Image (cartoon, rainbow, N blue to C red; front, side, top):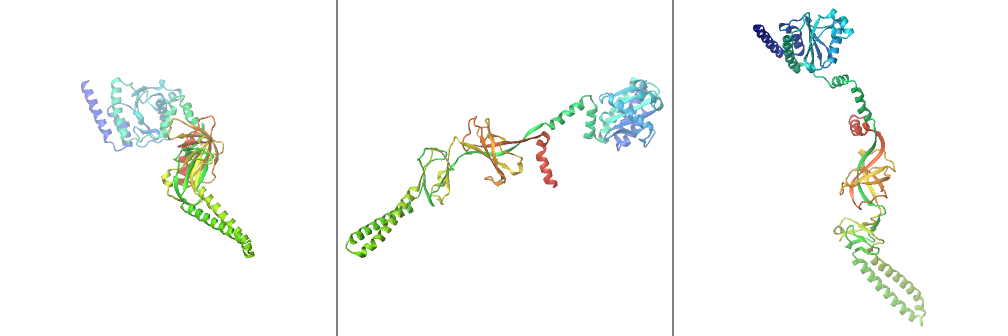
Length: 441
């Protein structure tokens, strides 16, 4: 008995060595169904492959099995039944016609001997042996050890199961798995609100632009950025050297015209010629008075004051002092901090169908825990290049009155909500857009 066991172990080692030497899955399948007879006595053997497709890959005594043969078609049903009933964790299983359903049991004796042994090869398939005598425990142990070696050899040559086979196997593994598969499909069509992000800034809703009243050079800026001012407070002034000189010259010309008119008026009493020049002197006096008055008003206009209460908005007064400006050039903005709105720039690449009345949420950069609700008022029909050199659509939104308003000039990110769309479209919108641009649909 001991000699027989030693001989069996030697044959087992030889077969494992032969399996490692095989040059492909086809050669390995031939070794499994034919040379296994050196270790185990059987009449028929078949190798069931679960690679890219489930099929009977090798049969004992046949070099090239015909898949259309009735025997192979019956074996396909048998292996499909055993694969469904048994788990890959089960190493072996003894079976006969009595353990089969009626459809298989009725034809068992026509195709196979009485006793069969199913050996698992893991995810790569199974090896089936059949003979007339029952299988002993010792033979089953040897067969399981040999099948384990065959499985290791198949891991090198057998093709991997693709995702379709894995998905089909998962669906066939339980009664409720198909129902669970419907859950993500339903989630994909769950309606969600389409939203896009845009760079945003809190701006005054009724700004008053303080412009340069004359062409000249700014002499002094008398306020600081974001300083509150009252009506009549001085804001900035232009250099008055030129205008003051013109005003002084106009005054002297007016005095000279007045003195000339007085002399002509005295001489007109006795001289008719001076009476004629009196009317011309009066016209010159009125013209010089008008010029002097205009020059005086120009000097007053050089000093700009706040026409109402508010906050002055500009960058830095050092940037403006000594700067030459033209007539009507913007210097600063006078804004009411209690009347603000939201300006956002929506990139042209992220543009979606937005309409006035759509909800907007501002997430300020300076206070990440706060958010402000607003309503879209208008959106530009044409994209423009903004300060960031980005082609974008300008949007204006009005803050809801039931909340505390954000600070003027606050920057942040605005989320603008559009229509409801399926979740799958919301997630795949950007990839589909990129694919369409790349493929040229």
